[in-house]
Length: 248
Image 1 (tube, one colour):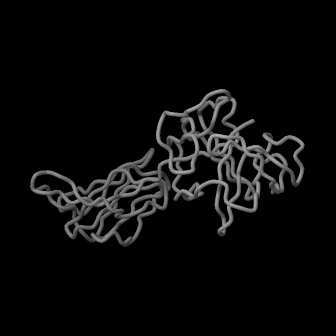
Image 2 (cartoon, helix red, strand yellow; image 1 turned 135 degrees about the vertical axis):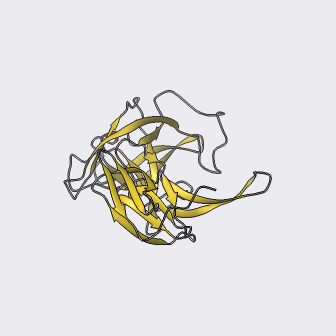
Image 3 (spheres, helix red, strand yellow; image 1 turned 90 degrees about the vertical axis):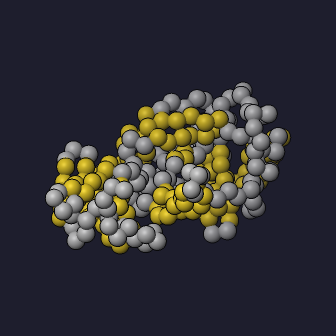
């Protein structure tokens, strides 16, 4: 027994779980899934990775098994030291009554967390993600999720209330952290590969590449036209063709 989740690819839904959850299963057969509060037997076709040591299997039931939720199946934006979460159903435990799940979803899974300590992507056929965390028995086969930071735009009303909240920009390398604004209203933000510069509409104007993760930036110098870039182990400085916005 273990956990599983569904993934939609090109309009077709697959059940994803750990390969060791189905010992001796073969290519086709029936599996039992806990769906909508009851055990349900489904005929499925198994799709295995080319490498046997990759502990994943995709099951094709020929139909949708669960509702589709708007999540991207990607590791894009994942960085070392980031908090990640694994979802699953440990043996003998239930979350029934602990919250209201989406319609047709079933029980809300248990949640545990760990730190992303290493990513080994030397093998193009399978990347290995190392988490500094501990899974309980029964979590095997469940998904790993993480928060992909996006910058959002809010408007401040006269009484201090915030409105809006639409996505301003999405970080394509690591996460946004510290940022500064120049005299033209452009945003200079730290990222996993350096500094990303956006215009007031959220359009990417360019990047300053730095060979390590950047945590913060700051305009300095007599004319505020020197950008200081705080990397993981180094402090960089570059002159730019603008100036930092003055303090109000």
